[in-house]
Length: 341
Ligand SMILES: CC[C@H](O)CC(=O)C(=O)O
Ligand SMILES: [Mn+2]
Image (cartoon, rainbow, N blue to C red):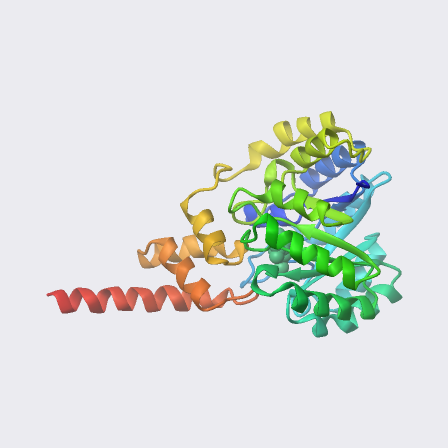
């Protein structure tokens, strides 16, 4: 098996877990350690991508341009990537990212909406960026649908398309099937991005590699939305055990995860009830903090909100549904109490 290209997304997916509060100084430190470890690609931006610091997605405490500036200043031989969600980000952000020294743009859409990404792939290519298509919530569609969507992205200029397990809802067999189908259909790289709701982030990433994935994602200590991601340091250790040499320094990663990333966790890094419910119901991981806030406000069990969002097939960008669902559930509960009286 050949060595995959590893992208560390602690400073992007991890941004969800710290409510988008990374400081420029923190980004500089983490990037310099990841670069010292020779991680090839390091992703930095608001958790929901460039330009996503908004009331709906959560405001960043620091401008992402200051974060990117620090990342680029400390990147050594690594490439800096940023995520971009069409609609949250716009073309000017792509131009600005290229000016600031971002080299890889990862364009994320719901996995049936590749067509909305065309103009952004075109702009990214014009700006000289490497491009990645990110098919979010890939558990919701069968392999053949994903392959068609990926093919569209390839035709728009993607250099790689990822199967993204946004809800941590896939199991190894379903990962293998999806990645293998993309590999058969495309002549560009195929990637896999895991979340750990079912305790399978590492196992699923190994399954993706067995199916031919060329690129994989991780975060230090698993810091990421909801149940978090595949831990970059664990992935590198597992790859070494599998005799796949990535050239990444495991010791530097382990120390950085322990000394610099572990202390900033806001809640314990375990698969708790709400994370498991999210994966089991197939709900987008970055909804979780908003769900918990709504549950507290409306005095509800977060699992009830998560299950209802799952029934309604909510997708990324529909964060405003969380409050609607919470309000409806509260009204139902109150109505039932009235009946019992
Ligand atoms: C739109 C941002 C989102 O967090 C992308 C991602 O990492 C995922 O869907 O898992
Ligand atoms: Mn993610």
